[in-house]
Length: 158
Image 1: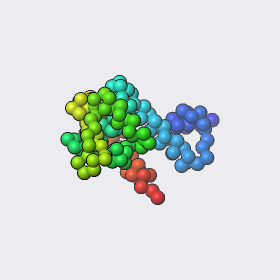
Image 2: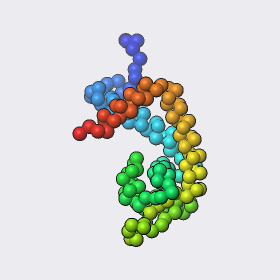
Image 3: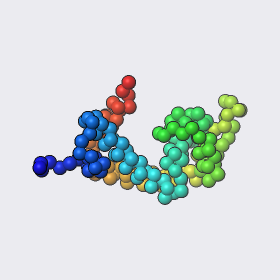
Image 4: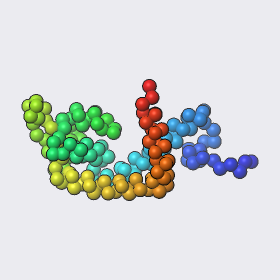
């Protein structure tokens, strides 16, 4: 029996062999992504919103004091949702976002983040910074840059 330590992915999935190295790599990326997403979701849920709601607030904060129509918000979402209208309606109900008519097209409404939404976003962002600090402590700046580079290559591959 070898002294070689089994990778975390192999231990976690209770699988000693994979079809290929790329198969193990894909599963590793998915598990790491899920872990980070769970940390982000926990920060959002503490503040009674979903990660998708946080994402909408983040997008709207980027254009504050202006807003975006639904189609623009949808195009910028990390996780694209077919029901963007319902997500925005929930934020309006919580007074985190307001809707107003577009000055360019009166048939179109624009979502604008409120001060209450900005305050909530700042609260959640402080928790996100802690997540980022954890990653930087575990990985270091060089590894983080490598991850960004690898992800860019994956995301832009044809």
